[in-house]
Image (cartoon, rainbow, N blue to C red; front, side):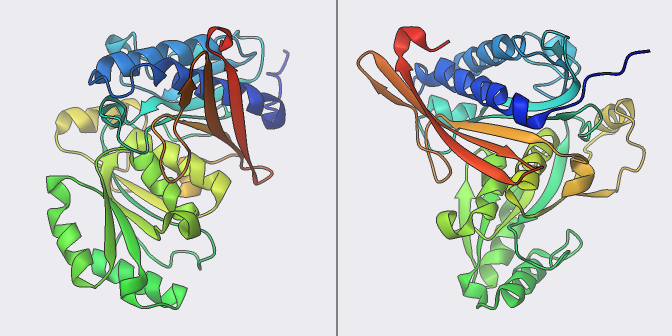
Length: 324
């Protein structure tokens, strides 16, 4: 019996960059027009089209909901030509649909790819997340600590005052107590309205972004995408699934998760080497926005491989009618 072709991350990385790039370009015309669904659908269509050009036997393990929510890129959807290695794909065709519709910072197109079985099949529930950048002792902060204890522990490890720590938190009513507790330590908070994959990634480039730690509750699928990014960029991350009802617990059971209280580390959410690509849509701390000029369009893509630790920033400029 013939074996599946090997996952060659180096050979597939440029193709993955094109997937993120084309999804961003497709959503460019909808920046600031107020229509979240149209922007998301444009990115989805472009991402699917590009994925189906790749010589992979891909399965979407982190996508935009279940099969009945098609035409989104749904969990379990098969993509690629089928003539290549079996791969897991985690994606968010437009992370920050609201950000795009309102022309607010940090909207990205995001995709990660690894060998088959390399990524946690996270159900579409919430996840408690905690992340810091590279260079710290292992488990210097944990999910079992209170928010104030995390700030104190990180400040001690960093050798700075608590007031020198900046924490990124998603601005939601559910985080009001957390926000108050963190502010009570003297630490600063960068509140974001959407886009917690970018929020986690900011920790890995603290000198540029000014963010030392990410904490809070957000989507579990985005947690796996963020873990893939940190596996490439460096940094620590933990996640614990949160279930609000029996329906959500049933979703976990369908994905094979039996320990509902388990804390997953970065390398338990993403167990093998992966490649990761993100293209800026509205621009922000990580990536500049798409630039449009008469007859031309320009994007910047962050392309990373965890195996080599390489990080590339790729600028793509093309005539508007030649961007496919």
